Length: 471
Image (cartoon, rainbow, N blue to C red; front, side, top):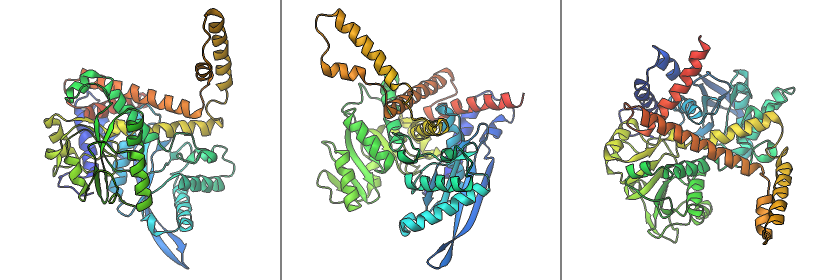
């Protein structure tokens, strides 16, 4: 997305990296080693469609190989290009390091408008893309593991996994070559909503630190806080839904391509989402006020603004008019480097994408582990935990005058299933990473904001690995 910023998406990522690297005492040349994209492959391949051949262009960037496999989504978009892929691959490297997931960063894209093709045609194209990735060593459970991104989803990941299995019939871990698959095809429960759930947990953790809340000129908890969400795709929808239904936040506005809906009394996310699915747009939604130019809603007063769609939506063209107290970056790169400086000077607290957007890769890591172990989470210990709980309840019942009611017993006796364990692991990951970033910020006087602190945390961890490799 074009902005009036002098810096492109990739340049913004590298500028943020440089700012953090300067705040650290790194060996000479190490920052350049970490920042440099290791490899980018451009592929042009033909696919037989409608009795002829159509040529497609795709990319796969491997930003780092300090650990393997490299990890990152594949997006299908008509505006995809190599520079965007490199920027997203770099963000994946830092993102994985920030949340302590042992993957390096990678990213892929195909320059295509998926809406112009039938399901059968998309399958044919996707399987050909998988073949091209495989022949170049850019696909495999121990080498490079894609996942869904913009324009792709569970079904496409199944096609890639199936094609990889056909190409490697003796590979017992073939399904681990991609994540984001349907549960019945080796996926993990909770993956679809993982990024939105991670956004919720990250914002919850922000409100557990009163000093951070105070810096944002806010007080109290999440309940009643006015939120504007830009983008009602997978991430924005789940983040808004969870924050509204579970935390009591007030969804003040929702922005989509055709415009925005604003409602002072609060929107019901599920109602808006279902209306969008049925009509393909927000205009005509019976509640609230429709604003034709949705980007204008980015500048409305609110407690929390959640950009959850495209990069560069907040630039030097509009940053000075942003009135949110907190910006929670659910998308990749929604704030340009130049805009970030303006927001910092305005006192707006930014929870950075490299941290907040990491729920997807965290749960992808859980799916990858599940595929390698060939055992669903909870299968080995759920009944044992329930039996242990039953013994404790029996002891309690025998020692107190009034036995526990049956509902309380049932809740206490319930052992953890896969979705419970996935959510627990994700929440722990987001809480731990937030605290590490805060500690980096508080301990280094050269660091002024959480984005720089997040990058610095990633650089420090990756640098330690490189130091160990080159001893």
